[in-house]
Image (tube, rainbow, N blue to C red):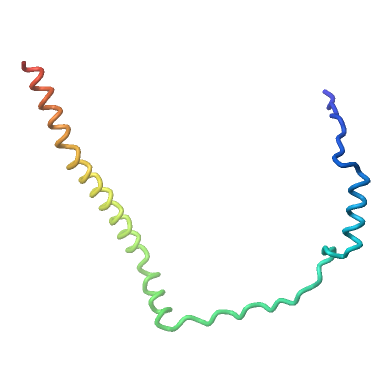
Length: 106
């Protein structure tokens, strides 16, 4: 399998590009080299207060309890949504069944 080369296309000609580049480089209006910049590192953050460290230690040791509470809350929200959907649509389904039973009995 051989690759086929397409036609060469030049837009505006190579001479125009060379002239434009020469004009731009002579004007000195663009940056060609990076100048080193001294950047001071930021100050390290101050240590947290003692009460915050105590609270972090307390909550860190009770992490398993909070995970159980989180999943319990998620389960409760899901059950609440299912209950609301059941209450919303149970009457509509009961009416449909009653109409179907009435139509079948006639």
